[in-house]
Amino acid sequence: MHTGSCLCGTVKFEIRGELGPAFFCHCSRCRKASGSAFASNVVVAERDFVIVEGEPSLRSFQSSPEMRRTFCSNCGSPIMSQRGNLPQVRVRMGTLDTPLRRGPGDHIFVASKADWFEIHDNLPQHADRPQG
Ligand SMILES: [Zn+2]
Ligand SMILES: [Zn+2]
Image (cartoon, rainbow, N blue to C red; front, side, top):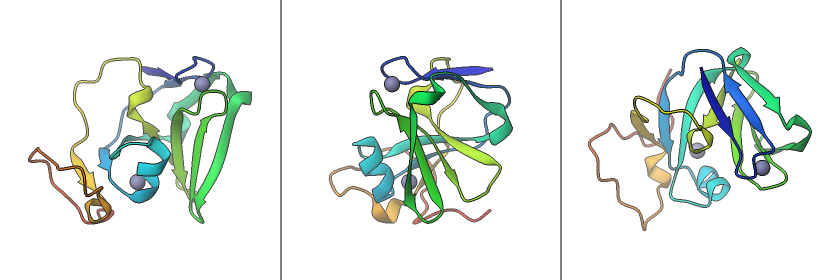
């Protein structure tokens, strides 16, 4: 199991299952939402993602017709996003408090990458969202 929390500690969550694929997302929305060059997201089954503290402090923002982003309203930490009615969430890996054996395996939305950031690894790069 993995645990995570926001910057101010109000929101705490557990991931009660396996972590799915993880991505470095360079899309412009993730850049704005994170305030950085990219977001690091891991896919988790919705049923395995459980808010254990601070649920009333969570707020959601519909960043596109199909994407909702959920964050702590007290400190602004991005926590996760959910696309449409898919039974999965994308957890912001920087909020995890437990160690991970490995990081993301792909760069996605590289076509939208910040021009001031260069990718210095050999992971696969996808212009937008990979199929599947
Ligand atoms: Zn917070
Ligand atoms: Zn993105």
